Length: 417
Ligand code: C5P
Image (tube, rainbow, N blue to C red; front, side):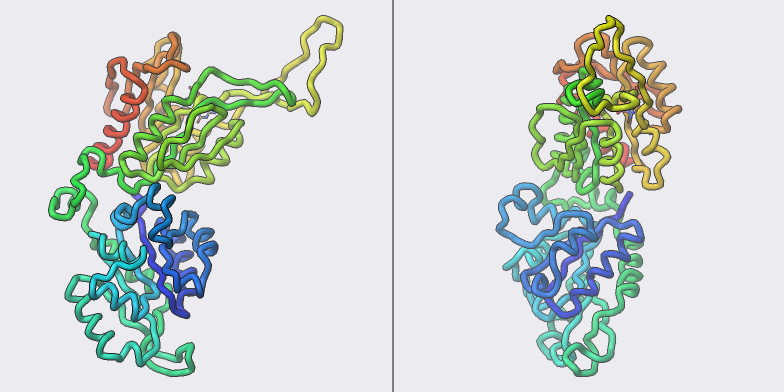
């Protein structure tokens, strides 16, 4: 599973080095999410962090949109490690006395995860009794504190207080991640679980779940396209259930008229090739659930103008080209999600086809359904879950329940691994 760092950047001249830190951490395959204090934004921009982290950058405690989509409690809980770098004398003082007057400080007070503080400040501020007292308090509270480097300071003084080199911070982060308690251990330690979430769902907390849904439209000319009857309901229900379970969800949706489920990031596409690009663009993901009914073929050449009848009575020729198989591509991808789930819509010998499809495409699981009735566009689904261990036949139920049950099943799988 991808390990996640929540990087809190406070306002010091060394804040620019936090950008290099993000680059190095991402290079190690870690997911990084950034919170900037107001003062930090005077030194570095949220935009730079957004580009490097490939994530939203958080900052405003009272931004209702942020609080609705991801509250400060969730932000503080869904990281494996919180890193404060650079940590100014000010934020260290707030941490030591439990002040929560902005998002960064509130996250630090709300978290039950290991915290690494990487101080950087003027040597006199470092040496000040108040700072040293705060550092003693923090160490006593179990906060990991990295010693600053000694050297020339931005303010033309010389001494202890320089931010350690980003590579050294990365080393320390890797060391702490290696000794961090596993998510499973945290779950059994009920004293740390304030919300007491449904344990069957808690394993999804903070995981990146990528879902595809709906049909694709493959243009023939400016007014015609190849499509299928998929409504997108099952995929949207799965995206909604994953978001409810606390996952960070990216939903790549073909052309459907469904509202975006709460807390889900939606990317709209039309064609299979656009869907593939959006899926690959959303990686890395911990789990991918490909529900979309992707068109197998597209028109080999899209006509620039509407194709006309030529009066001969003979139909216009329509040459087809095969579309990329997104599921099979993901299965071979260097950033293959740890759990890859495909769907199989069949009209006959459903389970046999699904077993063969699981092998052929390299998926971990295939959810197979018989679409010979009114499943496509309907509200119910009756599915079979095909895994390496065998086949589970699920009773006919609403698509929303299929979604919840699948998410629970995924959560159990994560716990078992
Ligand atoms: O081969 P078939 O279309 O039945 O495979 C279905 C599964 O493969 C679904 O999970 C679907 O989303 C995925 N798929 C895909 N790209 C394609 C065709 C199907 O990802 N071009």
